[in-house]
Length: 253
Image (cartoon, rainbow, N blue to C red):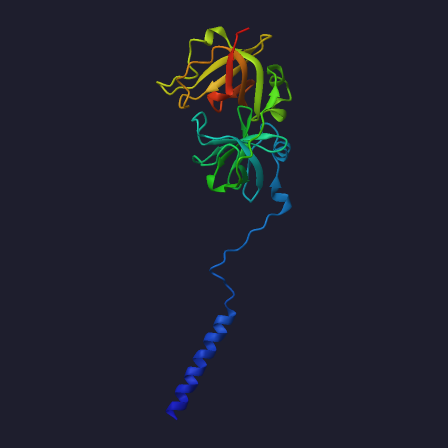
């Protein structure tokens, strides 16, 4: 009789265990898969159109942006910042920490937790967590857009050129800048130098005192320059990626 009771208890225990296992649908080894809804995928144009100048928006959900990095942090001329372009426009990304994302990387950006807005008329995504950047491909370098200084001064600048990679031909530094360096490397202070074209139009080149070329003397001749173009209130500014893109070695005009 005692043996039968033991068998009954054992069978009952096994039955309870099987039922409990069958009712547990949780798969601990497989995380839930998140899929993108079409409405969460945005372009830079969407962002500008939805949030015009002077407005601000905090992303609380998953909103996805795609772009190619046109300037990274390697030269030290920007810090905790990236510039990206899609097929139409460009935007400045201000990060919560330095990233290892490089120029030419195609990235997917989850905007969740970041703030979209304007800083002194410069359109930007601020407080973007670097964990929200995913590199999808590399070596996809954008070609600079050939522009003139007057084009950068036009009223459509913000939507047409702001934060884009551009090239300007037939330019040189003002004669008063030729004995100066790009920035103050000793005191790690930023500086502005003025570039002019062959008809007298001017634009500012803004360089960080922490950049790798801050202490280099400005180029002495004329030629072309490739840079990212930004805005500080009504002033247009060029940000150099590397000195090899300052090709001002021709005869001055």
